[in-house]
Length: 100
Image (cartoon, rainbow, N blue to C red; front, side):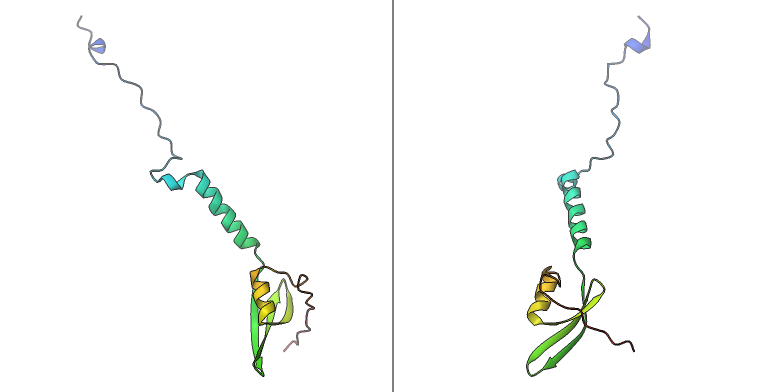
């Protein structure tokens, strides 16, 4: 009758907090995987570095560095390289670069 442990109402035990859950509904694992795929696609993308432009008689020629090789390309082929085409796709041959 005087036992105090029986006088308290029964409560559920405290649940451990899930550290993986956030308040934002868009921050779930699906969005995380999409972000990882986007980063991987960006890293896997072919890198095209334009080292110089030449303009002659209204035409542009760019010397570009792709995968360690230099190529001379016109505006159209430059656009295709930047869009993801490989030099082999465009039948490009590397040019000899003069060491200074």
